[in-house]
Every structure is written in C-alpha cells, then in structure tokens.
Image (cartoon, rainbow, N blue to C red; front, top):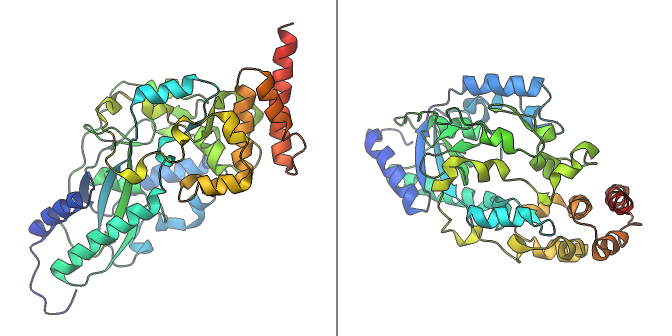
Amino acid sequence: MPKNSPPINTDGLAAAIKQWGQELGFQQVGIADIDVSNAENHLNAWLQAGFHGEMEYMQRHGSKRSHPEELVPGTITVISARLDYLPEGRVSMRGQLENPLDAYISRYALGRDYHKLMRSRLQRLASRIEAEIGPFKYRVFSDSAPVLEKALASKAGLGWIGKHSNLIHREAGSWFFLGEIYTDLGLPIDSPVKENCGTCTACLGICPTRAIVAPYRVDARRCISYLTIELHGSIPAEFRHALGNRIYGCDDCQIICPWNRFARQTLETDFLPRFGLATAQLLELFGWDEETFLRRTEGSAIRRLGFERWLRNLAVALGNAPASTEVRAALQTRESYPSALIREHVQWALDRHQHESTAST
C-alpha cells in the first residue's frame, strides 16, 4: 500500500470483499489467518506413511505448503473462496455408475478446466480490492501451487474437512472448487464452523478400494482418483476390478455423503458437461484416436491425462464390462498397440473375459 495512505476500515473492507466475491459468482468468501500447524502435522504424518504414492510434488516444496508466508513473503491473511460445480443430481450419477457400459468421469472434469476460471475470477476480486484501497501485495491460487487450501478454507469458515478429506459445507455439501488470495492486508478473520460428520461413516464404507483407511485419513495409493489420474504406470491388478466403469476419478464418497442432499446444481455454464461426456459409452470412447481425444478434451482437465492413460483406464473398464462380442472385438483392436502399458491392460481385460466365458460353459 502507498505510504501516507489513510487507515483502512478493515471490518468494512472484509464485508465488501465478501459482497464483491458473491457479485463475481462465488458462493462464499471467507478470511483466515495463516496458522495451519494442525494441518501441517497431519500432512507430515500422511507423507511419512507414504500415502502420497507417486505424487512427489506433495513433499517437493518443504514447508512452503504449510507456511503461506514462505510461499508469498508478507502474507498475513488468506481470502478463501468457493465456487459450486455440480452439473447434475445424484440419481443421474448413480444411474451411470450402475450401467457397466457407461463411462463414468468425475463430475468436476466434465466441463472446462476450473483452474483458469477460478484464478481469473480471483484476480478480478483482487483488482476490485485494489481499485478500492490502492495497490497491495497479493497472489491468487487455485490448486496451482503448494497450498493447504482445504485447511485454509476450513479456518475461513467455508466448511469442515469430512472423514473423506473433502471440505463439506452444511448447506452446500462438497461439490465445489476452492481458490485463495494470499495477501498482506490485516483483515479480520472468520471463525471455523463446527465439524458435523458425527458418527457417520458412509464414505468409508462406500469407497470401492477402501482408500479411506480411517476417518480423515486417505491412502492415495488405493484411491481411484489417484489410480486413474495421478498414477502414470500400470494400475495394480488388485484394484482393477474395483474401478468398475470409472475412467477418470471417482465421486462415490461425495455421492453417498448425507450433506450433499443439500447441494445445488451449478449456474456456471463453463462447468456443464461438454462433448457428451456425462453420458458417454465405454466402447465409443475406446474407439477414439488421439486426434479425437485431444479435440474433445480441449480446455478440459481430462486432457492432462494424455491419450495413453486414457486408453489404459478404458481398457480396465472394458475388462469389467459384461462380456460380449462387441467388447472383445474393441479390445482386440488395441491388442498390438505400440504402448506396452496399453497392451498390458488390454490383455488383462481380454483374459478376464476369457475366464468368464470359460467359467460359464
């Protein structure tokens, strides 16, 4: 801020920031201090247990993740915002999961990639603050840097961290994105909300691979989102059947969560499904060539997966599908694919169908 500037009415500014955030389309904005020591302890224990798997970036930045002032010097408060993204109701999602020939894609990835949209909107909020008070130090993030965003959002009163490790809002569930503005403004902070999971363990019970090994403790190495998105190599055989028809991520723990009965469908058109991906069939997607994949995932988070892992995931899903001439024929088209990774998963799928065919005769 410029020298000799008049003192800021921080209470009034905080209220204005929340109002401006809602005008920009955020469902909620809160303000937190930067002490996330409890979350830091949880993170360190999680890393020491090896639960991060191949996500080396989770430990790459040392203490910057849990010390905002190290990531952005001068930071003393964090403005946290949430933006709802749910594109459809739970009945539709369950219906697609229950049809083994449908391709299930995590609902956050059906529309445009949220990273740019969130950062752009946060930048507009920061510019609005700057227009009001003059220049100040800040930096915007949305899952784009070593930030403990759920811990900060929880401190800012946007919800509590549930037993599945997602943030839950009492009136909005958990279908939302988070973003932050790290700032040197001395703003009044909001109070955290009470944790309201109670004795419920629905998310632990529904997890197809039992990745939620204890309340608030997720072993990413078992998580379908990790296996289908973060893992670059072979999906461990022990988990392949449990993937079912999930080809990109998994929403089971959110679909089952009782608090999500209050979730509202998004008004953001950018988050609505594109290219028919919400109702796509496995055989259709497995038939795409790389050019089609790149064209139909343009602007989507799915594109970062790459065509090879896209086919890997689809091969597993087809291995889990009911045996049919069409499914076997589709798999056989990739039986001699140049990628050893694809050949391995295709062969697993074909062997599985062969075993089922033999067992039924």
